[in-house]
Length: 630
Ligand code: PRX
View 1 (cartoon, rainbow, N blue to C red):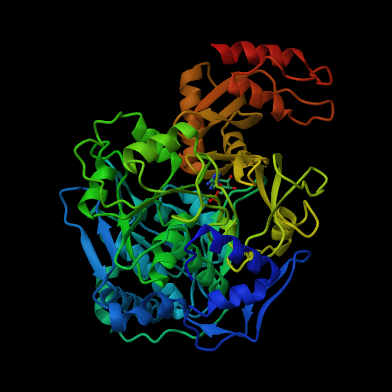
View 2 (view 1 turned 180 degrees about the horizontal axis):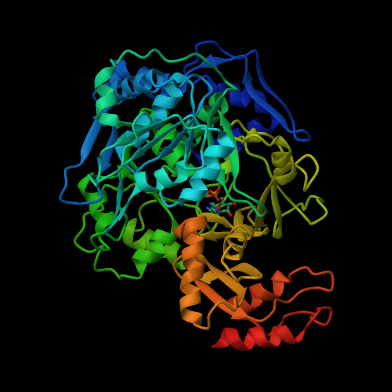
């Protein structure tokens, strides 16, 4: 299934456009199905209704585990590197991982989890997280992993939206020098979650936790009560595999739904091709499993291909800025997949942390989550890849399930800051505001996809209308990505960033409306407006313009209070980098906040604010500009 040369890529790409169903059928044949499909694809983008491999039966864990046992049972499936470099790393072979998944699958069943039930997972980056995810898939339950940085309220919202029956968590998590009290956060969340019957708690940090009789159970006790015989549940290709919540430009985060057959095929296909994975190589994706990158390229993609996936509990700068490179050296990593924000952060420490570390095992480098600036690209290329490793700048989204536009390592000539070309099977199109196709090269527009691919979202959980409105209604018959994009003279794609009210902070999507709602919950705050602005390390920072709440007169303390509120409502990841107190916001006569103006001010570019005479109160702009300068 791997494309080997650029000519082959071009031919395969053309074939995939001319004969998409035959193309995907060929890819799907590389996986193990209990029963093959009656129909490869049925679709329309108007409802939308998308079905891949209809009628097929499978279990994704048979593809990720069982099918590797005969020949590769002793091969490392997961290598785990702990936060603390002085602690032992752990290797789980395919055989052992299979055993643990089966055992934990039985724990879930014993606790009443049935096919189709939703399970919330809020765990540190430990092997048991992968075990929990796969155990759900084994028994046909739907997992909803929530990133460890979200607040109790955010978790409660997600649990209630999906009506989760059970929560899997740990006492706590280590992140660099910090400890996060996961169980405590869950306890707070569950005050408002009537559907949750049981909580399974893994011991990890050994921090004291309260265990509620009748509800809370220890992981370690539970696994002793069951055996390792857990036949995989037979699932339909279009049954739900997981829900993953992501921010949009309006309202609460939505639960992006992925289904089993198509997602599996797409995660496996993209993993194998983009990274040019070779047997016995060690693949290191630095994402957290709480995000889609971790789902697709720590768990499902690599394991479906029988690869060795390295899972790192810590952060790149702990105990010092050489840690990520130390991990590469220690485990002889061949493929390193990380985010521009990590690269930029490590760049700022200079070359010393890189020197003296043996990075010669590296063969492919990857980037994901946000546009990679040229400086970071070159630094990564020269100092980490030693100008000898292709960099795959992979563009994709939670909704796409896997990589969409990206170089294929050792196949596609790369170009700094370009995601280059669509993978075979992917048909991007640029459109103008009216939805007219912008043809030719050397053009820019809004990025849409005009034909389905197996890994695409099927719906947003519990609210299909929202899925339709968000992705399929802006332009008729197209999936709208929310990204702006340039196609250069060579036909290469460069993603220029979101064109909606979503900010990309350190590769994490945050909706401005969500942050505004959180700020507005703070006592005394009347109104606020949040925009993104360029940030050296994070890519984008969060800039909040807030009408000063006249609760008390200490601006500094009020600022900290507001940060506290945002942390409580969403989580620390959504804390504004800057809060500017203002007496009013620039609004049109109809009362709409002119974010365009605020964006310019936040960027520090006030030379050309455009026409502001139509504003309700043009003087407010002067005031904001003056205050922002200070
Ligand atoms: O704006 C694009 C940006 O991240 C968004 C998707 O975010 P999320 O669903 O959280 O998934 C992140 C990991 C797949 C996109 O709409 N983005 C992602 N990758 C790139 C990117 N922007 C530019 N270049 C990329 N390689």
